[in-house]
Image 1 (spheres, rainbow, N blue to C red):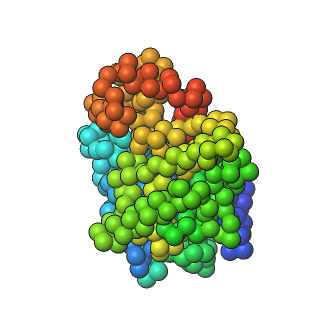
Image 2 (image 1 turned 180 degrees about the horizontal axis):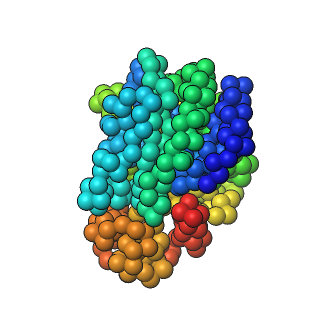
Image 3 (image 1 turned 60 degrees about the vertical axis):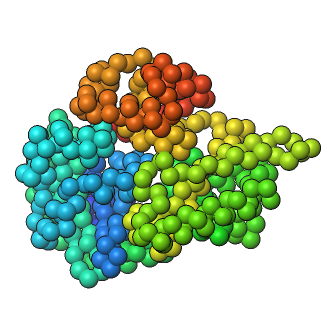
Length: 398
C-alpha cells in the first residue's frame, strides 16, 4: 500500500482531470489501486431510468472478466441488492453480511468471484440521484482479508473529490451513445469482434476485426454495412432479425443464457475462387440488461475465427464455439494438462463439488461423455488455445 500525502495529492489531481478527459477514470482507479492494494478497484454505475448497469471500468480487471460479469453474473450477485439499499456515504463490507458458510455454497462466489482471485468487497455510493447510482468497489483476495482501516480512511478523505467529479461528469455514466466504455472494452479483445445492428449496420469493428478485413474476401464493410457473400447474407440477417424479435417479444435477453445462445456461421469461398474459410459466432447484446453504453437498441455481437490469419487462439474461441464459461475453460485447460479434479479445485480455490458440476456442464456443451474424450477434443484444437487460456488466467490471478 501507499497511503502517503504525495499519493493522495496525485489522486486528487487525476480525479479532476476526468472532467476534461472522457477516459480519465482509468488512471484514477489505477492510482487508488496502487494506494490501497488488494485484488482490484471497480467503478460501476446503474442508470436510474432503466435500472441497467450502464458503466463498468476498473483497475486490474481484464476485459473478458468484466464482460462475463456484465452479461451473466451481475444477475446472481447478492451484493448488488445490498448496495442498492445502502445509504450514500456508508461503506458496505460483504463479510459483515455473507459469512464463510454462505460463500462456500453461493454460485456467484464459487463460479465467478473466487476463481478470479477475489473474496472481500468494500463499497460505497459516490452518487445516487434521479439519473444514476455510481458505486466505488474495492476487491480483496481471500488471504488478504477485509479492507484495512487506514486504507478506508484514505478513501474517505478522497471521497468528497470523487463525488464532486462524478456529479460534474455524470453524463458519461448514464445510458447514452456518448458513454463509450463498452466500445473501449470490445476494442481490447484479441478475437475479431464486430457490433452490428440487426439490419447489418456496423457500430464497431475492433482492431482485430479491422485487420481481418485485409485477410479475407468473405467479410467486408462497405458504406458502414457488413457485406457477406450472397449465399450467406440473407440467412445471417434473417437470424439476426429473429433474435431481435425474440428479445422484444419476451422482454428478455436472447443472450442471457450464456454461450449456448451463440449462433454459428461457416462460410467458404465460391467454387473457382481462391480457397478461403471463415467461421462466425454471433449473439445478441441487449443493453437494457447488459451494457448501457451500447445504446437502447439491441446489437449483434459477431466474433470471427479465420484459420488463415489467426495466429493465436485464446479462451474466447472455446467460449464462442462450445459456450464454456471462463470457469469451465479453466477446468478444461487443467484437465488437458492431466490434473485430477481435486487438484483443480485446490488450485482454483473452489469447492470440489463446484468443479465436478462444471465438468458435467463441459461434457454437455461439448457433446462428450468421459474425460479422455474431452481431452482428445481439446488436444485437436489449435495447440495454442489451451496454453493461451492458462496464461491469460494466470496473468489475471497474479
